[in-house]
Image: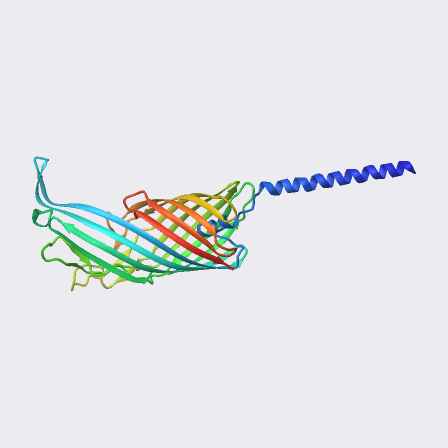
Length: 347
């Protein structure tokens, strides 16, 4: 009898120890896969896609500034050192303020739809000096506009969820409609009769004037204490016929326009300081192919841009956050700097 009691006690203790070890191992395993903080999720909402919220609405503001100077020589060099002819310096300064309303709806744990509607205010200052070989003769003009930009609708589909050895992979597609003011057929006029160097457009565009479709992949990988993210996308613009694509007043020049395809690559990392505050670093590079007019590729229309971005995210409440970003242009074709602030609200 005592033998049976002792044997039963030993078996019970063994099972209890095994159960405890199993629970302890499970807890350790869970600790090795840290949960994303609310602040990091707000960063990924901008760079990737989150499927844990049914609906979110975001109001965003961005300010971009660019400054260009161009030395124009109308003449020739004598003895490879002496310039004979007219000399002028043209300067262009531009500011663009964009207000964007974005709505995201998660239809299933793998599928998300979004709608973006931008409204732009832009002002450009044109300045020219050098009339009649004089650097003292300077003229300038300001052109501004505020109107709707190009609206777009997007779809995100989770191909593979994140595992220990694989990142979270999401396929993204977007269609953009030409709801903004097109940049074609805008007349360029002389605004200062005393300085014929200064010629400016009578209006500014707020859109591309073309339909476009984009597709790509975004990836996210958790690596405690950092969150790594990357994306690759391709955008195609569809050709469109216009009644006037020229810039000469009182002269119609019909033609077909097709902007060059665009490729974009971005890489970044986000760190959570605490549950509410996080910061991120990222780099984005874009390649623009040559545009076509009537099927003919145009020289000097291809470009490459590079932007280094710094971001800080702060969770104001459980559902509302503030996402700030500062983009620094690293190439001559990029805006000098861009500052943005967004307020995503997740229901």
